[in-house]
Image (cartoon, rainbow, N blue to C red; front, side, top):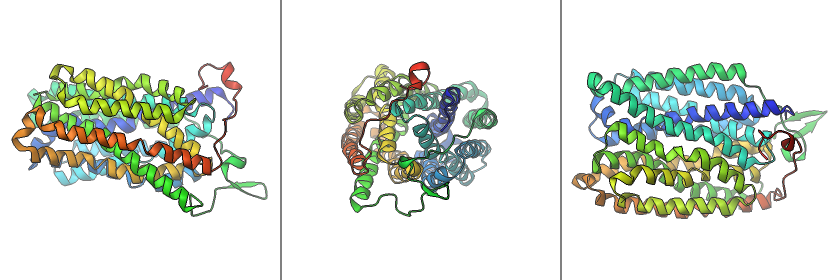
Length: 436
């Protein structure tokens, strides 16, 4: 591990920027569903929302192989290659002549995004064994920026172009975001450094003739009990992800159909989910370093209450409500990721995280298609807020159930014998830029 504080700080910043692009692509299409439906002459809006579900399938399906790669190969090269593929997918989508090509393009975008989290999360956890929650919270600001800018930029650009380009106006912002990602790929390759592999007992490396080799065991967890706790945690947090994804896709349709929002105003409202999380991610990440489970439980339960109230709020209160929801909900991600990384040794973190988001993510992100199909089923009721009361109450309930994943992660940490205070990093006291 590098002892250069400048390297650590620069790496955290760069990881945050790549985090922004990874999630920007996932939400940029949310305010564009109705235009995409018109331009590609789709039968129903559920076909438009299916694009994001397919993108997220491409994002989660390769996550475990990406985790294996992150445990064995250069994480810098994986991150750069992933962003390049991610960006090229958006460029292809912008020129897609038909629905089949659009599906291929969004799947390619998702595959590119799958490179990021296994490599970046394991890299940050290695760089910052002290204050891991705060470090991941700081990197999480990048996700907040990406989630905020994606729908806001897409909606704003469509508003500028719709009068002249009509339904095809959605293509221009998609192209511009793809090209910008390719530029950032070059910048990252220029500025980023590879970090050294961790050695020592906690890394679970096999030392032969003075050479560190990756672990060769095919099993991530040595006992059925550990596997059980891990799968329960992944399943529980997939319910969190289902609710979170639904608040974007369902929210887009709810605002436009039930409250008459334009694509521009819808993009602004959806971006509100992520604006406040730029503050809450590092704040709660830091607080959770002194009590991971209680703070994560708090933000999930408060977010659940806001989800249940959301469709009952007046149209003028939609953006403030999204701000409050995002402040609490998005803060759960760095805390849960820190808990997962602390529950397992460094040498297996990439694979564990990859499997975690493969299992949980595929279930959670089926929501984009599911809510589109549900809104289609509502028929005339989709034009009134009352038609959505039951759906949002169900989403709130899923968020409450997801809290059960927290004790499962704690149980894994205890049984892996990693439940001990973290070491003190004296360098943090001399460099206020580093997580403490």
